[in-house]
Length: 106
Image (cartoon, rainbow, N blue to C red; front, side, top):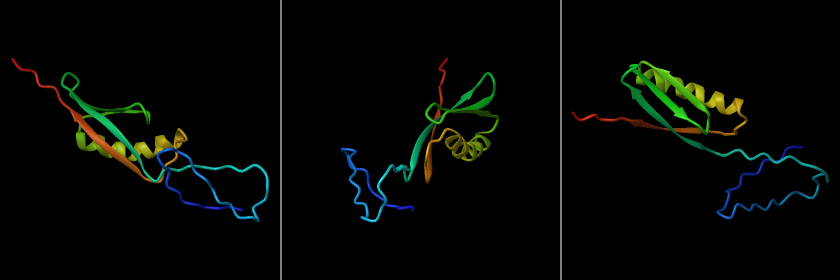
């Protein structure tokens, strides 16, 4: 028997489930799958290597590429796959890209 119930997690993180009376007594597994997972990915350009780098330790991922557009496209494909391999449940992934730059003044 599978019961699906959508609930909003309140600030106190306490959830009370109202289960049907015909549900068998015994052990049950409750799986929490966030509706959306949001990750900020830092992107920086290495002048010496002439490459773009992207990193996030929570996922965990680090990628490099010569092109910023190609790097972002690779991230869009790789992040859901890495989350799945690391057993991090999600229904939707929201990626926020933060491009870091450093200016050297002479």
